[in-house]
Amino acid sequence: MAELVRLDVGKVAHGGHCVARHEGRVVFVRHALPGEVVMARVTEGGDDARMWRADAVEVLEASPDRVPSVWPEAGPGGIGGGELAHVALPAQRRWKLDVLRESFERFARVEFPGEVAPAPGDDARGGLRWRTRATATAGPDGRASMHLHRGDGMRPLGALPIAVEAVERALLDGRFPAGSRVAAVAPGGGEARLLVDGRPWRGGRADTRPNAPRRVRESVETPQGRWDYQVDAAGFWQVHVEAPHVLVEQVLSRVGEADVVLDLYAGAGLFTVPLASQGRSVTSVEADAGASRDARRNAHALPSAGIVHADTRRFLETQRPTADAVVLDPPRSGAGARTLAAVDATAARRLVYVACDPVALARDVALLAGHGFRLVEAQAFDLFPMTHHVETVATFERS
Image (cartoon, rainbow, N blue to C red; front, side, top):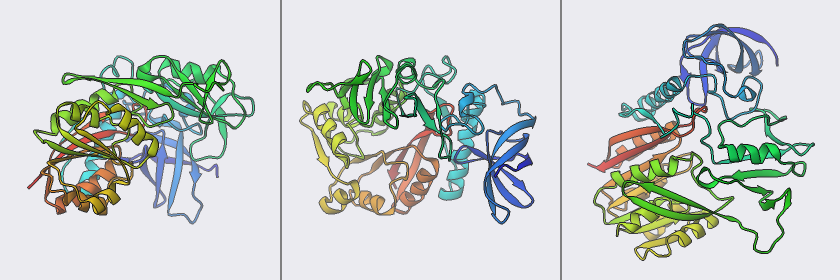
């Protein structure tokens, strides 16, 4: 569908779009700003649909928060991953704060108590050059390409300004087997490493050496200390160059004097290592086998750290551990009712929740309240500039 409609754009909504109405129908419109008047191309929905999706393709009345897009390829009809590239940085943070406030009021029936803070260095970089990991698919000509937003087609990348330069150059300058999945990783924002279909890539071809390196070194430094990690190049690690430092500092400052800590959905041990290095007894629980192996390696010199490869909910329900505090960093879908009921059974007095989705967090805030956990503090961090994503750290205490 290519119908053009004139829209008066309303408030922001979770997912990177704003809400408008056309002939009584809700329209979720991307690449717009609240208060604008735009011509929008309908991308999903027919005449009998109650809801449409659309892209703003012409701005008739612009918001003062609109700026020239820093990544036009991610604009209307383009690739995903830069849906707020037309929004001034301070307004991007207000956008995310509005989503957090609306999510908390709607799903948790409480006010969101924090703000949205930038990561160190982001303002100086204009919200660019922060991503240390990126993936693409090789097109028919071997060029790194990305899928169109909510579409089947692909477009070769001409730029990737949200990535650190080493990642951008590794993807844009290379040529890869058509259809292959290409991942570029620049630990700490340094030299990039390439994986093609999960295999190390070196000098324009697969690195077939038996000892071809698959691991990268990361470090985290906060006022509380410095810690070193090794993770599989294809494994999970926070993608913003400053995110590990920001989040570790937040978790350490919030966990209190707890001697026994459960680190749930622990990944490669980002929080387990600094918590255990302070002499706490820490149990790291992670379902992904590779991440759990990384955590075991990273915590090998810390006798107070126990590494468990298991599904978090199943571990809690079958082992019934107890703890003074719980650190919870669930996937985007949140922890959910059964997992939080099992967390309740640990008798922990304090819970530190690291969340990457405002709606999932707000739903879990309501569930935790039902278990006697009171939200005492929450702060969001703009660790994904130019996108609608936001990271939030919340502290709960048992009432």
